[in-house]
Length: 325
Ligand SMILES: Nc1ncnc2c1ncn2[C@@H]1O[C@H](COP(=O)(O)OP(=O)(O)O)[C@@H](O)[C@H]1O
Ligand SMILES: [Mg+2]
Image 1 (cartoon, rainbow, N blue to C red):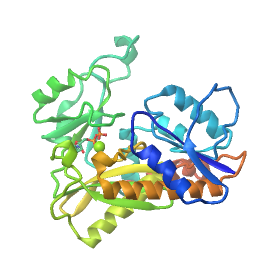
Image 2 (image 1 turned 30 degrees about the horizontal axis):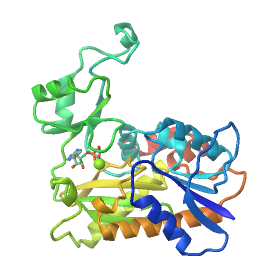
Image 3 (image 1 turned 180 degrees about the vertical axis):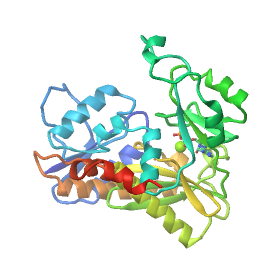
Image 4 (image 1 turned 180 degrees about the horizontal axis):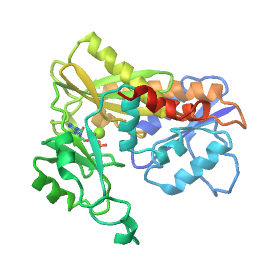
């Protein structure tokens, strides 16, 4: 018997639907349930072949539990080691090296110093910041957002240097990305699930929250949609996510990746709508079943990104060298 578990927090619609969908398929040797976490003892295996993790980004105790589970052979979706290491700036850097367009982007040293550091801790950092160089590259208006964040928290649109400095002063110890604004003709959110399952959702971020997935006359441009699908796969393969959403803003026919570090993406029927919900429930169920069937007991059953695999299989420098202009 292979058990599939789901680990979740406050969300109410997706987890039970996922469990019910798997069990309703009555596949011999496969059963799904909500993960039961008991006492967590080092190097103890879990009873799960697969765990779909929807919450460890907010619960460090669960992240530690999942790393042990992965070491003991559970296929954890998404890879908890990679998820711990990843952030949006790295996403953009990787995106450029694999040929997926991203907005011009820099990171800013945090406005307030991290706890327990002093001016001396920053002797390597050139001061004052060369703002002119940054502004020439990014231009205004621009977006400023946490380099490791999500859920639209602390996302600012900034219109001038003064506006940027004023808003930056509100961000305390956060490391912020400063990014060129993409004025877009279309915007997409794309679900990705391992096994190259991609679902493109037209999205209107300028609508109120409950209407963002309602788009009048979504484009039927086949070449554009094919490019969006191709870029979604490239990014998720590169980063090594099994379950993600990738957002693109389309400018002059070119999809530009905006946000693709969403390893516990919104899958609530009340925000994504019936049709998208049904897609994600069915495809997540299929993916988890495949992973359970391919699960090799006692081995590492995690997905790693192509980027990481390259480090182990070739000179790491070649990736960057190949793409240098
Ligand atoms: N560079 C950008 N150009 C245009 N719009 C942007 C840009 N960056 C962010 N946005 C807008 O802000 C929203 C939230 O930013 P996003 O990067 O998706 O952060 P989060 O991870 O918090 O969702 C996006 O859905 C998009 O509408
Ligand atoms: Mg987003």
